[in-house]
Amino acid sequence: MTALPSPALRTLRDGVRAGVPGAEAEFWLRAGRTGTPLVEPDPEGDPAHRLVTFVWRDDPDRPATDVLLLVHTVTDRDRHAGDLTRHLMRRVEGTSAWALSHRLRADHRASYQFLPGHGTREELLRTDRASWRAALDRALPDPLGPAPLLPSHGGRRPASVLSLPDAPPQPYVADHGPVPRGTSAEHEVDGRRVTVRLPPGHGAPRAVVVLLDGEMWGPVLDAGGMLDRMHAAGSLPPTAALMVDTMSARMDDLSCNGAFVDWLADTLLPWAEAEFGAPVRPGRTVVAGQSAGGLTAAFAAFRRPDRFGLAVSQSGSFWWPDDDPDRGAEWLTRQYASGHRRPVRLWLEVGVQEWMLLAENRRLRNVLRARGYDVTYREFNGGHDYACWRGGLADALVDLLEDDAGVPAGR
Image (cartoon, rainbow, N blue to C red; front, side, top):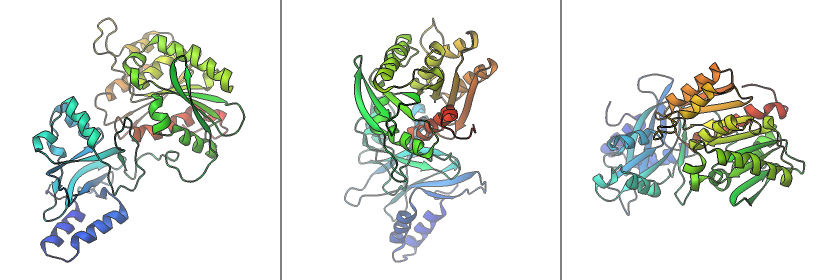
């Protein structure tokens, strides 16, 4: 493949070489009008793929020595392998444009950022944990990306989102106009912060969703706004969301911790019932989480089916634990395989780009099906990414709670 597989970039390069007046200005004008990255037909003619070219415009006052492209999971795989070289962008000769193309399936979704370098290339390409965290702290979104940005946590800049034409629709993620708004408030329950989102109106909720990693879902990702849009569309019954802070104690809370799950079941849910009339009914109570939170959601349904009859696991860390000889790897999968069948429904999804999780999620799916569990399972073309999880969470809630929302079934 040539250094410039993108037809649009070849047109830019050839125009600049030929001295066509305004060739570069016209390119940036068109990029600003259509948005970036550039999405073009697959050079191999496969309609199931696209050529996706990310472009970065150099700052004339502080030109970069190199630019590193960070595409969630696509770049992470090589970071884990210790070599980011193939993610260095190339400057288009004679222009301010840096570019890098990927051939991607047409259903790909991912967050992405750029990291302009102003030092040595060796420094920019460091892959140790400290350097990688510093890179993420400095990375920038795409100024020409047309999609709403994905907010970040902990002071980091937001990320841009690539959604190719066949990516699963996410009708409730973006704000398309005013809808009746629910109410949010922060509470302290037994020393732990919980953000509570109540549905619009004044009636008691008919369902409850416990969202782990509430620091992300509440103030950062505005899950409450997504629930409002779902309520307005009639796809969700009036649902109270209990967004529980766990990010500061993830390794303790979200590692099949029976005491934490019992706290959710015996302290948090009764508190929500007393304060807000939220029903303590396992068939109307969802526990949902991502990564280690996905592991914990599935564990909560196994340990406390009397409270959590519905569980959502997104990119669950079912490899856990990897350093406990007494329990052994994939402990929870083996518990589901050997324990009596619980009266619960599970909704599992994982990204096909998640090389570190895909096989483990498939094995749990197989065990659940073999044991007769009611399980919905799907794989999305993306990675360990809130850009994917936002839409997946909405789909899961519709699937699990639709019977009470009065909408047609359709898993």
